[in-house]
Length: 85
Image (cartoon, rainbow, N blue to C red):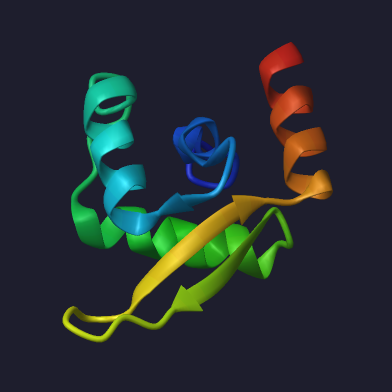
């Protein structure tokens, strides 16, 4: 259940790159839910599949492309529901 309603949602309150989300996770959530980077990305994929976040790829020239995540209206509603419960 924790993974389904992941606290990662709090790290995706606005547009974020995966690197920033990982940093936010480490600073804000890791003490509640220890997860490695692979777990974070699997959870982001699941949140996207559920329609709770959107992901776009930002093309970069001198660096690897990066993913930018943004919470959807449905994701914000689910996060509010989770926080209220």
